[in-house]
Amino acid sequence: MKQSSGLFENITTVSEAARLAFIAKLEEIKAEKGFKMEREGQVSNHLYYISEGSARSFYIRENRDITVSFSLEGEFVTAMHSFITRKPSYETIETLEKSILYRISHKDLQDSFEEFPEMERAYRMILEKYYIALEERQIFTKFKSARDRYLELMDNKPKIIQKASVGQIASFLDMTIETLSRIRAKI
Amino acid sequence: MKQSSGLFENITTVSEAARLAFIAKLEEIKAEKGFKMEREGQVSNHLYYISEGSARSFYIRENRDITVSFSLEGEFVTAMHSFITRKPSYETIETLEKSILYRISHKDLQDSFEEFPEMERAYRMILEKYYIALEERQIFTKFKSARDRYLELMDNKPKIIQKASVGQIASFLDMTIETLSRIRAKI
DNA sequence: TTAGATTTTTGACTTTCATCAATGCATTTC
DNA sequence: GAAATGCATTGATGAAAGTCAAAAATCTAA
Image 1 (cartoon, rainbow over the protein chains, first blue to last red):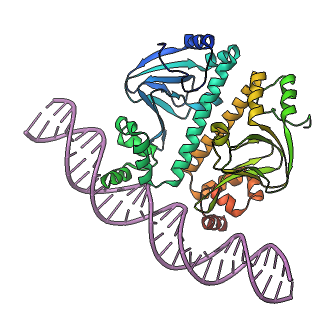
Image 2 (cartoon, rainbow over the protein chains, first blue to last red):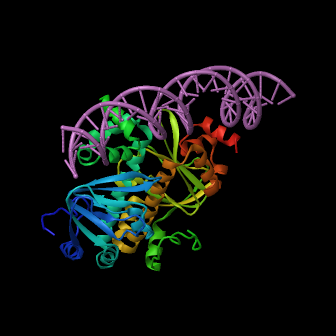
Image 3 (tube, rainbow over the protein chains, first blue to last red):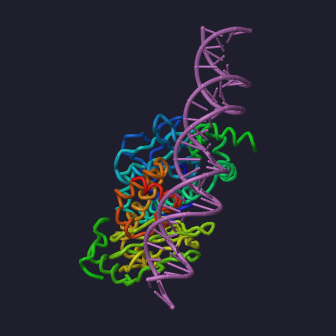
């Protein structure tokens, strides 16, 4: 992994020793669009860092593809529920475009906690970010109309609107494709 | 704090030294019903363990009291968003009945991480539980009808139905009092 | 015990968005 | 370039739950 990459940049300070040991455990993946990082039904075994590109997490319910989240460059992502509980994941994660990913296995991560408590701290902080994102999303969804949810997405994460398909955006915003189409017609 | 209490029982194993040091930092609170553990607008400064009793977290929006969560005996609770971000809390947490609480301040908790990395692990695991609970609740809310949400609450946490008021239960289940009343009439 | 207050239930009506179906538009493929 | 395929739009209708208002039930306290 390039030295320049900002792996822990926004998280916490980590000693050089821990940093190097951690990086040694990373696996680089040059992924094409549609690469499946995690699969529904399998225990999520890696924590990913998106160095370049983007990803989306989704699951199938009643034959519908429902997008749970989008992740952009510089973010960590995994099927967190499964990664924590060690039970099969209900979600699949795939790249939205050609991407460069770094990943660490669950076991290597746990081992790094034993070796470097500061790594556990870094992970704890990633978890905190995950938690905050989920909580904010929940409140966001609760109070806004379909229209306002779309407008807010345009404001906050316009990149997603470029990278994802209409169906993916609609399910992410918890509305049908038709509703999204009607909203777009009236802006 | 009584030796017998199961503070870390369901979380992780912690050395006796860490355990004792941690317990020394705890403050015991014998709270009456309605005691405000955290207040909206203030930075959440404590992590609570409910030894006896119960609590609910809520916020006010457009003059409505909206219950976010109920916490029962044996659970940890705080205004997590604020506790993590150190920004003012949007939620208030209060006891639902006479309760015995133990709490540790944010600073003491952070200090304990420096002293005992295993405490950071324990906290990390509390965070994981919090995350899982939130994610499960989100999916639960998304796919069930008002009626099914009520039925599931009756099944899973019947104690809440005894301890909380109708308005609190309705807002927790994301429906109006009228809807809840109609559902109850038809069971 | 009764008047008043509060909570709960019921009824009529409205809103929001889903569903289903048809049509339009664009792109690929032969 | 016509057919086929896939995605997006539009329209008609319906369902779930919200809103507002009034009635009924329950609680409280002098």
